[in-house]
Image 1 (cartoon, rainbow, N blue to C red):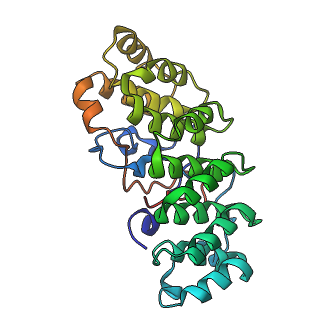
Image 2 (image 1 turned 135 degrees about the vertical axis):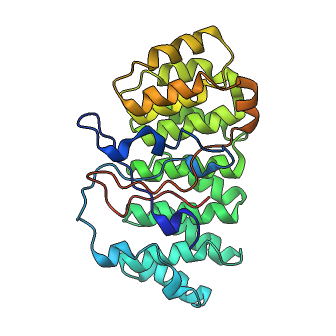
Length: 283
């Protein structure tokens, strides 16, 4: 695997006792050229370090199956162990698109009992594009696992954010911070300054990660109320939000909007309480 799959993405929301690794300079919202969707957060906040087994840690490594036939991968995706299923669906991402591959990934994304398999499967299915991927992603916006829902937003953004604007907009009200944040990022790329009201609301979110990215995107809103809110956020309780707001006050809104495509591409922070299964999709 390449990109963020090699590094694994770790993220846990910490409201108290900030760790040095939460330094704003390591935040995806700071000092990064904005080029792609890799900013979208898909990780896991409810696990603790040490819970993953060595087998689970290797689940995203597809090298052991890189020479396997598609038929073998499809069989593993349906009947293999949890680790084998995860690895198989990820490997299918890079195989030639076919009805069998698309159907197998769609089935895994919607029926597998393991949340990671469903998450990895919708990520892989998105690489094959098409209406089936979009339909599966819409269905997964109601998945019980928040990280699957977060990935579903990424999928809709990749497949056709304009066609699925209403679905992504509804995700702004999700009860999990990663889903809300992903939805805002996607919609900002679509609506630009018309996202001002939503971003101002998210700038008061309970999650510092949502506030951080609201502050980041408010840099692209050329309105006095946005600048006033950014000045207020320079006194936020979370240092990462303060630093992001300070930087946003310095950018040219028009230039920011033209360059905006997401955020950090290779942030491999390891924060206290995080697990190596926390990961960012390679988009």
